[in-house]
Image (cartoon, rainbow, N blue to C red; front, side):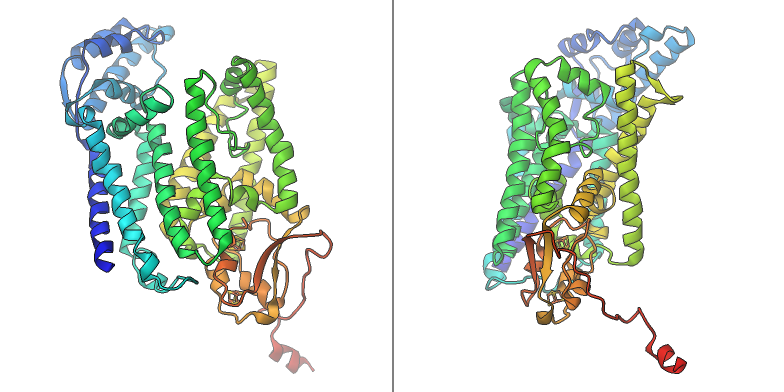
Length: 526
Ligand code: SF4
Ligand code: SF4
């Protein structure tokens, strides 16, 4: 069995290595039809740009995006500088050099990678999936009987912030940086999944399609790991199945099919303010121009946030969303599960968490109020503030850097719920409801607790579960996402996630703990 695992690891690493090398490989040549299509775009009114593109990019062969991207950027910057100098604002091209290179790269891919999509898919995703499954499946036998399976977590460099953990960190952060800030380097990845994208939406794949597909693949493979590891706990099995279903069907397949049916791209489970651009002007206009389905989405989005979300949190706690439905939570609970012990349990982290997450919520709400005001008043500036400027800052700092680069990239270092715990404005909103008006609590059978600390160690939200258990106190915390892992790793069955009457839900049990009082002080005062 161990040999199968090792073979799986080697196969997985080969697939990963090919995938990682792809951004710098491939041949690109902008030929006549693609050139015509790009320069025929109604947003390109600059003859200067077209001429420069013809002179410097057209019909030339570029080896890899690292050659094509600077050439395109130089053409674009030169053209824009020329028009700015001549004050020809209508001829300036308002697309970033990176986006322009992405567009041109996608249309001009030639050579082995672009012409052998199926084979390249097998060599990357295929090997990755087969290798990962060969690595994971032998655990059915190797882990022995079902039960808590965390032996050795602090002895393996992949899960104890050792060198493998840091390598994973570097890979994830780099991946997100490419995705958000240098998407032209993802062009070769898009070729791999073109056939899948075309079969779903009818369009070739963009880099966000690659991300969506990869998200589903990674979650599916890691869900197999979850099923094996937590097979003693039915709650984990159902919960994993649920997040997987919502990710694959709601976040990935339905939006793509909607595009094929000429409808707006929309993830029906993505609630505002996590879906922070729902009320952005372009989205509102888009929805209003999309007929009945657009209006339905508009109403659904509002009802989801204002009615469905709080009512469900009242009955079931925020777990119904964070641990059963949400895509961010889904990735955290599958890909991120090996790292959950890294969540800091310090009081300092708790303080940072409360300030940060509520600041993000406030930021999202203020931005949305300003956006809606500017939309109805038909002005770009409110109270002297440029609304698009605020939106750009939020999109960059929160939407890209916090939720993406830090939120997922930092799994191996800070634990798997960095985003959910410190940054997600929807989690903050759900947290308010859960804390003050909900039937959810984790009950603790304190007499059974042996103070092993498993529950606190594996609480991804940094809650000191053991402290509650020792006192026999119910756990009612706004940050608890109801993942149930504290309960799943408790060897004494102390913890139970329950929905029940609101009365006595919060039952603080006052007992003296070590730090509360210095007994010698009391004694000496006598
Ligand atoms: S307290 Fe338990 S259920 Fe809540 S987040 Fe922590 S581990 Fe998950
Ligand atoms: S509640 Fe369970 S897991 Fe937590 S310290 Fe007590 S016995 Fe250990």
